[in-house]
Image (cartoon, rainbow, N blue to C red):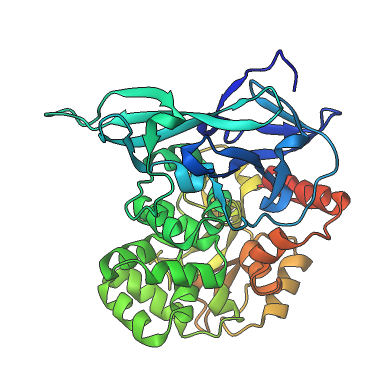
Length: 437
């Protein structure tokens, strides 16, 4: 590796760094490093980097293929093996397994917390972890102790099975990821570490992550949470996602958690659970943007700007008579986001409402819903009962979840058959969709 490069690399800081091929084209981002512990407390050897490539697939790049590590960029050479990364026996993830460990100083046995690790390149071209950034236990009223960087040989305890590993430094490294990316990272952690991270996330953040996880993983993760915490997280999830998850965990556990939920949130979820999973009622959310005809364009734009609303839901405002909570008063029509942008802020929604979209009934099939969305180029579709009341809305992402094979999130990360053209096409679809909404 070039002598001009930084020779000591702190690995928690390296996470998220862009990876490029020799032509300067982006390949992905660094998510972790793979190391193997050595006998007699010798510095561990870095075997390679875990790199996240398009479609959130995490692959292994041998450290011998890394040609340079500079500020903000890692350059690699050769073709990527697109097989999904799985740690082998004796291998450890630096951030996933070693960060936040409670270890001890060799000199006096004082317990310290691992905040980061640094690797350095030897004369033979090997990369070894020979520095550990630690925090000593605080004294008195101080919440945090002094920090320092020590040699690997000055600490001990990494080879022991850690039963009380923290997560604060790991979360500071991965906590800013989008929910879907964070879900992918969590699913690649060991089961024990996965639970530790889940318990450290706040309710809203964990709800977002569970919505993005594979069915089996999220059921297992929810099972590790105590009843009150699990119920709080379910309340933060979109009602349709919460209903799907409750269907998956078994009737007895589902009834227990519903009993612990806020009655208003539980009512929405129970209503959704009465519909067939692959029907419009089973796919819909009960929380679209709903307003009456006497609201203004300014009111609607303020609602659309709410960060908790998905792009698909924010693409349309549903106009009904009072009451505006689902099931609403009589459904009148929709106002599309683009129309809102073309009208003066004081314009009443009743004067620009589109009454042509009649919606579907809650028993409509998946095929009927997807055909309707495609035929009219919609991102969400109203679900109407026999009395013309708005029950909810089905969004295009909910339809895609049901159209794709079971456990598709896991499958598309595992597959090694995706060509570069396929990945580029899917990235283009994501970009175009984001621009449209």
